[in-house]
Length: 358
Image 1 (cartoon, rainbow, N blue to C red):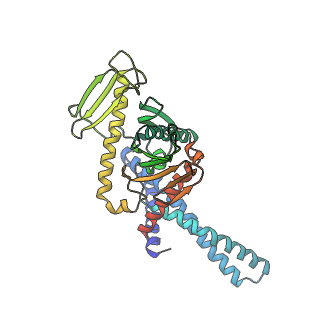
Image 2 (cartoon, rainbow, N blue to C red):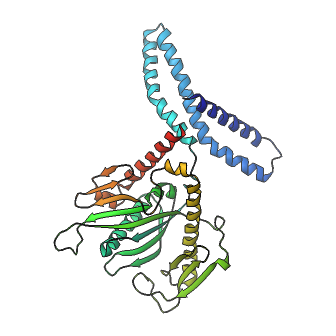
Image 3 (cartoon, rainbow, N blue to C red):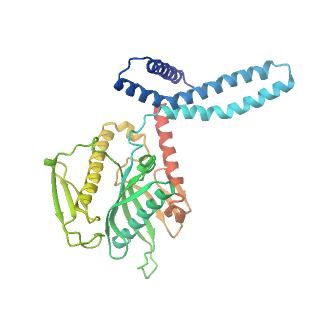
C-alpha cells in the first residue's frame, strides 16, 4: 500500500480515537454529542476495515518469518499454508479499505422517484415504456422495496405515455441511479404483419426523493390549477375537479397528478415529484461544477444518453456504458437478472473512481 495512503489511514485511526475519548467525557452538550456521535459511527466501518487489513499484514509477516526461520517442519508447513491464505486475502482487504475512503454520494441512502416516458417509436415506444415500468416494479418487489404508483398516462392499447412511481427501501437510489437515460428496444411489434424489426425508445429518470427540509418551495413561486381527471391515464376519472397541475414559476417545471380521487392527495403527490425534480436540478448543478468527478463516473446521468439496448429477437440486453451483454432478456425484464447489470455498473463506477483517486 502506498505511503500516502498509509498516512491517511493513520490519520483516520487517530481521529477515531480522539472521538472515542471525547464521547467518553462528561459535559458534552446535546448538539456536540450528536455531531461527534455521527462522525464516530461513520468512521466505525472504515476503522474495522483498516484493523482487519493491518492485522492480516502483521499475521503475514509473522507467518513469513516462521516459514523461513522455523526448525519444526510441521510448523513451517503450517506457516507456509497460512502465508498463502493471507496473500490471497490481503488484496480484497486492501480494496475494502480503499473503497471505504471514496467520497460518498450523500443521496445514495435516499428513496427515489422513478419517471418513465415513451420516446421515439409511437405506440411501440409506449408499450416498451410500460414493460420497463413493470420491470422496475418487479425488481422492487424482489428487493423488498415499496413501489407506489404516483401518476400514469396510458395509451389505448396498454402502453404508457408517462408513468411515475415512488420507490421506498434500503439503498434504492444507490442501486437505481445509473438507470437514468435512454433505453432502446429492438423487436417485432405485435401489429407488424411483415415481421419487420422496429427500433423505439423510452426515457428513464431516477431522482433522489427530497424532503421539505431539502427544498423550500415558496407559495408565491407556485401556480396551482385544478381540473377534472379525464381520458387515458386518469385512472380515477370522476366528476369532481380532483386533478392538480403545479407550475413552478421560477423554473417552468410542471407536474400533473390525477390518479387519486382526492385533490389534497394529488397535490401532496405532485409536491413530492416537484421537490425531487428541483433537488435533481441542484444535484446536476453540483455535478457540473465538479466536472472531473463526473468524468470518473459511469455515464453522465444525462437523460439523453443512450445507455442500454433490449434486443428481443436475439434475446440479449446490452449496456453500452460498460459493454456488458446478457443473453437472458426474459429474466432481465422480469427483474430477476437486473441485479447483474446494476452490480456490474456499480463495480465499474467504483473502479473508475479508484483509478482517479490513485
